[in-house]
Amino acid sequence: MHTRDFTRLERAPAYRLVYDAIEKQIFAGNLRVGDPLPAETTLAEQFGVNRSTVREGIRLLEQSGLVEREGGKRPRI
Image (cartoon, rainbow, N blue to C red; front, side, top):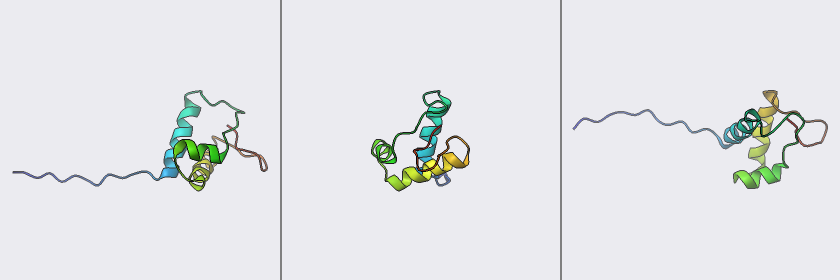
C-alpha cells in the first residue's frame, strides 16, 4: 500500500476569520460607507468569539483602510 504525505493544514486565527467575515459583507455591499459596525459585544456573540478577538479583527480592518474609528465611537465603514 502506498502512503501519501499531506502538508499540514493551516488554520486562520479567529480574529482573521472575523476580519474576513466583515470584509465579505463590505464587498458584497451589505455594509456601506458611513454604516456603523455593531457593538463589539454584539459581534462577539454573533461570531461566538471573545470581544478581544473581535477587537483584533476590527483593528486589522482599520489598518487595511476598510473601517475607521472616530474618537471613542464605534467603527464605521
